[in-house]
Amino acid sequence: MQPSQDLLQQARAEHESHLQTCRQCRADGVPCTAAEHLRRLHNNLARQARSVAGTRAL
Ligand SMILES: [Zn+2]
Image (cartoon, rainbow, N blue to C red; front, side):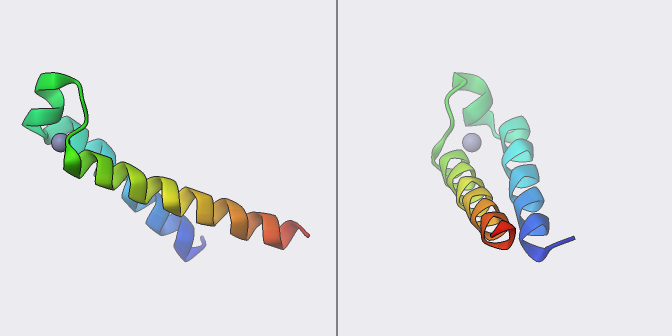
């Protein structure tokens, strides 16, 4: 497995576990600052993983 995929899965797991454990996120149903940060991190990694895959396909 590629390192970037590991990071991607790790970031997603962190985001999901945050949503499950964070009182603020659970109470409001709205992501708190930390959740937003984790989500953005995951999105960035996902974009990187896609661009790497796209580069390889060429
Ligand atoms: Zn939260």
